[in-house]
Structure formats: structure tokens, C-alpha cells
Image (cartoon, rainbow, N blue to C red; front, side):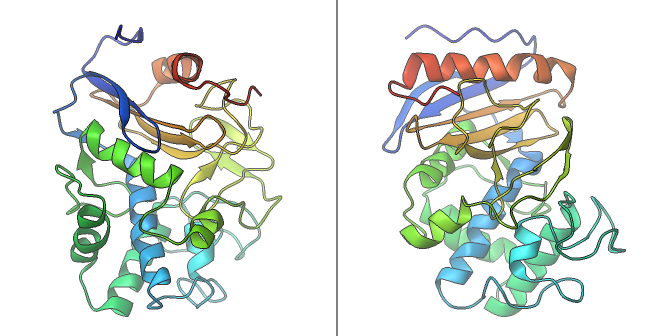
Length: 272
């Protein structure tokens, strides 16, 4: 199958999958890339597996006073991007935070009795039969993996095997609706919708997904020049990994790349 044109002069890998199997891979599929913040949806899956097993509750206290596991997953606990000194009241606005995911990992480790990398290995890595994923780094932004790893995670976001249908639906449902906030790299969005560990496309503009992406699209992008999205209306997930950090070139090419994927593989996809 012909490759999808990508106007980026650097090492990269692109993959597309439906809920059953990969339908397209190009670039360097065997290469390990930094996932950066695309680590967060994987960490969220591990947290939600602990919820599924009754070891953690979404609404139990975690983080700053008044915050819960749900607040941490939805970037509404009041933590800044980095650092433990809160910058907002709990639930008042959407403040994207690496610290929140570090706190989440520590909370789950205490609840399960496993170091968080061990919990990741036993739940997400083994549960999805991931081959290359490295989870020894920060649960917020420190994992490394290949495009086939991310496509397996994309399939899980389309059709859950690790979570119940109800908890999967909760993951991709807007938490604390109506909150505004900064989407890193794309400015203030109102509302800035997030689910549990995944961003929700909604009607944000500008955005890193495409004009043809459905509002129900969920996913994440990372400062390493990586993204993962899953569009339930198109029945597709797409992952991109690259060797150069996120910057203006990614802002320029990613929306058109997403639309090219949807146009080629997403028959029946929502338009708009």
C-alpha cells in the first residue's frame, strides 16, 4: 500500500489500526522512540485497572486536600505542570500537570503493593502483549516504545479488553464539563475537555487532530513529537512517533496527516 506523504525530514513511524489489527504501518516501525506525554494514557489504563479490580476508587482522596483520583486523571487537582505547590483550587479549572500523574502512580503503588513500573508490567504490558514498551521512566512522560506498542494501546481505546465497557466509557467521557484551560502548544481552550487520562477532541480549535476528526476522538500528544488518537466514529486509531521534539512543523502537518488517514481508511467516519 502506498505510504501517506509526511512532510517531515526526520526519522519517524506512523501506524493505523482498526479495533482488530493494524491496517497500515510506515517509517521505522522497529525503532524505539520517546513517548513523552503519550505515556499518560498508558499510565491511566494502569490506574483504571486498579479501579476495575476494586483496589482504588475514582472518588477516593488523592493529591492535595479535596482532590480525588478522578481529579488527578482529569487535570483538575490544581497542580501546576511541574511542582507540588498548587496553582488552582480543586476542580476550578483544567491545569495540565505532570505532577498529577506522578502523584497518581505513587497512590496506586501504595494501594496495590507494587512499585508502579511493576504494576504497569503486570497489567498494561502483559495485558496488551506489548513487546517493546519501556516503563521505567516517569509515568507522566518517561516511557519509550515502538509504533506497534502504541497501535495495541489504540485498539484498547477503541474496544476495551482490560476494562469493563462501563469504565471504558467513563474514561472517554468528559470529566468536570465546562472547564477552560491551556492545551499545551495550542493555547487556551474553552471548554478544554478531558476524560480520564485522555484528551477529548470536542470542538477545540486549533487542535492537533484533523478537521475530519469526530468530536468523540480521544488521545494525547507528546513533546517528543508523538501522538496517539482513537476515533470511535471512524473505528480507527492512529499513532505517530518521531525523532525531533514537537514544534511548528508538527502543528502544521499533524492535522492534514490525520485527515489523510481518515480519508484513506475511515469509511463512514464523521466529518466535523
